[in-house]
Length: 142
Image (cartoon, rainbow, N blue to C red; front, side, top):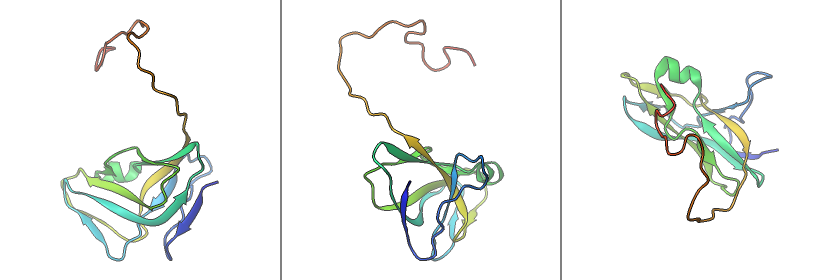
């Protein structure tokens, strides 16, 4: 369970369909916000979350906004940590060539709850060998 405190009029995240992995999250605005081409802004949601320890909430783009309008989450996926108690904001960027206006209540992103596994970081002198080795970007083909 994710406990949510919401400003008056803020939209509680909800799953649009029975099989949806992501819950829609909406803008909480006192006035419309316009993103010019190439511009990015943190869009408030009016939501504050209490995420259980051992979990995170990932903020991801909505495919319809990306495909139809070139609007996406700049730091996708964004992470909301379990110890954060401030307002959830979504950093949106306009990759299109046209201005895009966000209205109060518009669905602007989706959130996915994910388990977090924290492992210790241990400095060593050598790493085990693999078939791939140091092959990086493009090393396995196009």
